Image (cartoon, rainbow, N blue to C red; front, side, top):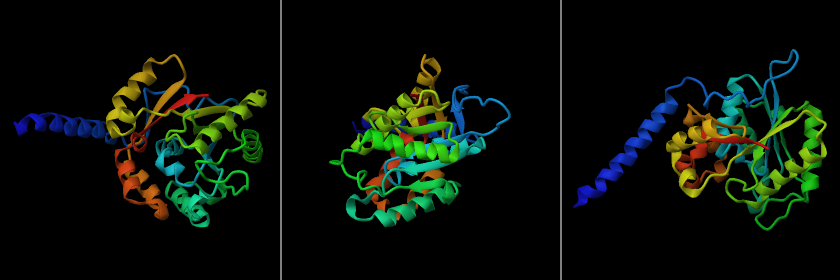
Length: 262
């Protein structure tokens, strides 16, 4: 009777392999289906966008947003990173800051385009409540400094449910509400249910279907080089423990990002 259990196991392995093969078949990151929405078309003579990726902690960029970063880089857009905290919950803030710069170097993001804050009111922790107005003000400073026209950040569920992630989303939402006259577009990384979150490359089928059938501006960005995610995450040596290694291997966020316009 043992063979009965082997059939679904073999089917799961085959589906994983086929899904991964579909991703690796491309030589460059791509959108499924090809999306006219992200990044939005430019006006005038500009050919590249200035994109601000707003994070809560060092390693968020590698653990969750690598497909988006690689896609934008492949299109020649400028990526700036604003990390709202050092991630100092365990007293490793200064180490984690250095690791973020190393990870960004692995992702070809120049150090001068990375800003890591250490504000006394924005400290890492599940019990810490971050002020949304303060988050909006700090983000606006970077928008003015770098002439940002596109923002990418977490959605209201924060992918992992971490309250700091959720607060970052609400801070960006507040910024957009109070600055509607500025020509800024913002996109959020869609939080997935537990099954889809840990389905690895298999989620490519459902994500592409949702993206193609949704009436909302949604795009599915595919990472054709998952090893780049491992390389970037490994730069966060203080965080590269066994359960995060498993997370990166099985998380669908390693292989694709579903972005939705805020």
